[in-house]
Structure formats: C-alpha cells, structure tokens
Length: 251
Image 1 (tube, rainbow, N blue to C red):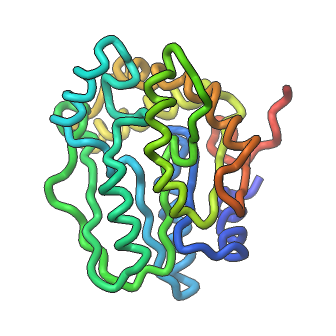
Image 2 (image 1 turned 180 degrees about the vertical axis):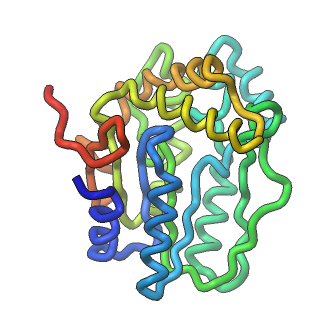
C-alpha cells in the first residue's frame, strides 16, 4: 500500500480549505503525517502550519482542579479526554492563523513535564504570516456528543463545547485502526522514544494504564463520526498496526 501522505496530500490539493482536521488514534503518527504534508506543500510553494489539540491541554494546575471536580472518574484524572482542553485558546489560535495578518502566538504543551504528566510550555511559538493552510490534528477532533451515560457521561457532555473547533474546519480526514489494540502498543512506543531521547516519560506500565482508560471512547466515537461526518468534504481511511493504509477490516 502507498504511504498515507501519497493518498492524503493529493486529496487535500483537490479539496482546498484554510483549516483541515485530521482525526486519528493516539500514537497513529499524526505529527509525522502532518510534517510530511507540510514538506510537500512547501515544494509546491505553499506554507502549511501543523497544529495539535494537545497544545491546548489545560495547564497542570487546572488539570488537577478538574480531576478534583470529578473524583473517581479515570477519564478526567489526566489529560487526554474531552473536557481537558482550553477551547477558547484553541479558537483564538485558529482564528489568528486563519486571518494571518500579523504574528500568531501558538501555545505548545510539554508532555515530559512533571514526570510525564505534562504542562503547558510558558513560551509560545511565534508563527509569521502568511499561512496558506492549517492542519489541525487530534484523536478526539470531530467527536460529537452521542448521549452516553455511565463511564462516558462526563466526556460526552464535554464534547458539546468543542463545536467551535469543528465549525472552523473546512475539510476532515479520519484514520481508523483495523486493530483497536494497536493504540496500546503505539503509546508505549512513543513513551519509550521520549525516554530514549533523554526526556522524562512514562514507564511501559504507566503508558499502558494511561491509554487503556481511553479505549471505551474508541468503541463509540470513531464509528459514529464515520457514519455521520461532522464536516464535508471528508476522507475516511483505515490503517493497520504498521500505521500504513489497510483494507477495510472484516465485520
């Protein structure tokens, strides 16, 4: 199968939009894919900027306060799930990049801070205009409320606040796993790479426990998005455990 960029980049060229959403599982290679798309756009004379919803996580102190508001909810105890982002800063950053009449200040999140618990970097990046396109990526980007109760009640309710992000998307790409267990292995690999680079990261056991709490979301929201995409035009692709395009999995 061809690399993902060989499929996604031509599709994006055929569907121009100032902001493109990329929904893909944690560890699926969203950052790597966006970097390749940015590189190819530069060869075509355009400047694309990649932005992650991870950079809009709540600062550590606010995350601790959020967890205290929902004691016993594992999805609110750490960053990652709907409800753990600063929606307003995300909106302001997207609008600044879209209008690109001056320098945009883009927040960055340091996942290695506090022993891997993470915190917002106090120094934002400065992005000079012009910006021809923004690639906005995230594993929950495009998820919408499904009326869930029980374990998913809090995150489902929180998704309504993400509507302003979805409203700013002019196109959407969704990557789905043929094997849902892949996300566990991918996250462990990411933390190992962080540790190998000399940055604090979670142990294999911590990374597995961290990502396992999100598996119930994968059983609901990706399929709901594929059945009713919140943005058009929309591109849906399956990826295998090797992160490469794959055939549709059997039922």
